[in-house]
Length: 64
Image 1 (cartoon, rainbow, N blue to C red):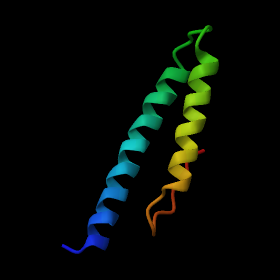
Image 2 (image 1 turned 120 degrees about the vertical axis):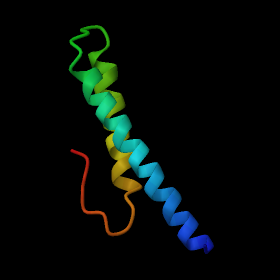
Image 3 (image 1 turned 30 degrees about the horizontal axis):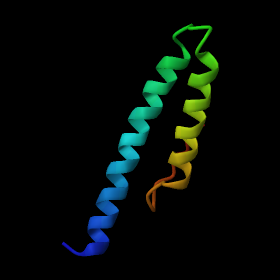
Image 4 (image 1 turned 90 degrees about the vertical axis):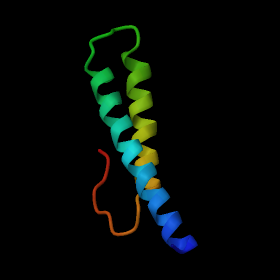
């Protein structure tokens, strides 16, 4: 396996991890915890931004 393929595999793996983190952040945002909802929304926004800037080539999905 070439170094380029290895890098692409790692990027795809990282992207999948970020997508799972985004789903967890969405669940936290819907938890109804009035004291932490602002923190959860901020966390979700940061994860969504990471997804958008680390998206593997050829992937067309975007975090909203």
